[in-house]
Image (tube, each protein chain N blue to C red):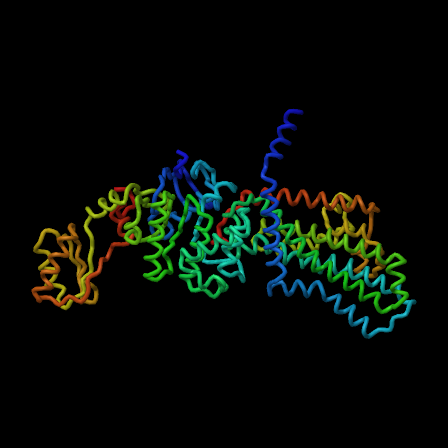
Amino acid sequence: MNDQIVFEDVSKFYGEVLGVNRISLAIPPGITTLVGPNGSGKTTLMNLMTGLVQPSSGRISVLGFSPVNSPELFRILGYCTQFDSFPRGITGWQFIFDGLLLHGMSETEALELTFESLQRVQLGDAAGRKIAGYSKGMRQKVRLAQAIAHHPRVLVLDEPLNGLDPMARAESMALFQELGRQGMHLLISSHILDEVDRISDRVVLITGGYLVAEGSIQQVRREVREKPMQVLIRCNQPALLAAKMFSVNHCVEARLHADGKGVFLRTGDIDQFYSMLNGIAAEGLVDIESVAPADDDASAIYQYLIGSDGSAS
Amino acid sequence: MREKIGNFWKHLLQQPWGLWGIQARRLVRMEVRRNLFSWRAGWIYFLAFVPTFIVFIHLMVDHHQALFLSDDTNVLAGIVQLYYIRLGIFFGCLGIFSRLIRGEMIERSLHFYLLSPVRREVLLLCKFVAGSISAVLLFGAALLADFALMYAGFGAAGSDYVFNGPGLGQLEAYMAIVVLACLGYGAIFLLLSMIFRNPMPAAMLLLGWEAINPVLPSLLQKLSVASYLRHLMPVSVSAEGIFALLTVQTEPVSGWAAALGLLLLIAVVLCYSCYRMRTLEIRYTTE
């Protein structure tokens, strides 16, 4: 059990407000993604396992360490929080260097690790500038650099892709994959399943403080894929398109957009659906302007998994 | 019992004191840098050096005759007792020490410290030490300047008073008072800032408490910083009117007893602060 992050019947209440309720989890090494809408309890779970908040009940163990006031744990754990704030007047370089000095290492070693981590997040050039002058993406990167600087075995990342441009997102994903391959525990939170499911070994879905589903990404994705998906198609003849699409069994629901220039279609087989749509577009009967999934975010997945009354399906 | 005490000492010796020492040195250095070298510390510099400016004007403008040396000695004692202890160090420490924990929670940066491999008790004590060093450096330097400027105008008479008379002894006593005042108020404001989101109302209550303390029963007088410091004053201030209330001494106490009493009060406050620090949670949304 010492190579796992273990939550045993953990609950956290902020006064009368529920943070998480009776969560039991055992997270093995690799990349695990915590997915849930805003306010679902992802950050609370991360704060619990890093000791920033303490559980109202239950027990947490991170690789055998209790997170409560445990300096030993913080030698092997890095946490990139989503708090977008830093000590005043500090440069990116100084921010990481100061943190490393508190590990008790020599200044030379701290200096080497500082530059190494800054290079890993492609922030070497801006290291000497004050963080107050950084863009949102750069601030996200310097937090990530600080979290990985001391070569932790457990890396906790709260919404690490927020504020990053597509290039930086791709670089970060590649870095996470590399760290995951090295045998680290990576716990990443996101409110968009699609964003991280390409690199995750495992996914934990939570909502309203409750654990909804967990397992390998394939298992959870399959469960979601088997549910009907909704797509918004903007076109010049939405009624005709709906009629065409309804002629096949895959389409189970159609609803015209309020402006009359689009249609929401729900399908049970998204691959067949797209194939059919391509056919209609090629025929030229309907001029299709855009096609976009209308419910591929986490809330939609929750609707599938939990149902509208909040009970687990 | 002996075995328990033996185990306790063994446990103490097994702690990583060397590492804690390194962490403490580095933490104190970082915190002192933040306390002293920021624009926001400007008003604390102002609090510390306002009397220095006034004494400097006095040196430049007024005539200094040996006859008035004792008057200026009384003025200096008044500045220490009525300004520094009651107002300057009080509000200066409020600014410095309430920033250490609560200020970082408001700025949402305290979690960086809590996520570092430093025991929370070590972190709290280092922050306290750094705050104390910052306050003592500022107010100690200001008092030293006040003292030098106050007697500089008297020429040979002033020099004789300082080096051959009671001057240096008084300076030592004032410095001890400044150090103890910074430690005492610092410990209290550090704790208040951990208990209250806005420590200002509690600080105002404390200011009132300190003001009425001399007329309270002797037991309650022990719960005050200024009451201990009054007993260490090398020169008694003869205040009149409402100011007389601030200088009352109801119960004579030796200097050592007063200093030890205050250090004991500081130790108790710091122990409770350590307990609060251990159970502190980061919930910035409630700040």
